[in-house]
Image (cartoon, rainbow, N blue to C red; front, side):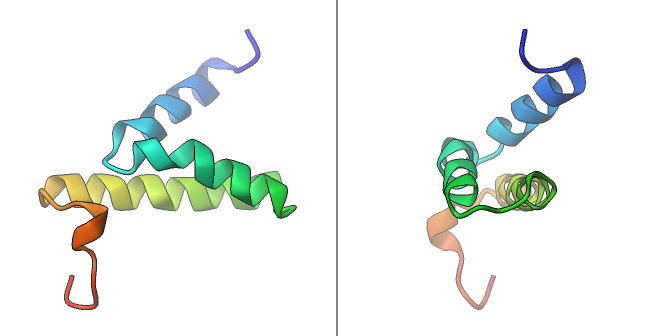
Length: 68
């Protein structure tokens, strides 16, 4: 197993939100651009938080605009 239990749980949480399908692509983009691991983890956490926020409000990424 390459991930520790906390890392596995974090990965599950990241993929659980409404933006979960985009998490891996976003992580690869950050890695390709040379972002530090700590920065990547923080960005992914923020995206996951946004995904959960959207889900609680029954919104999709496409619904985001200046009003939301």
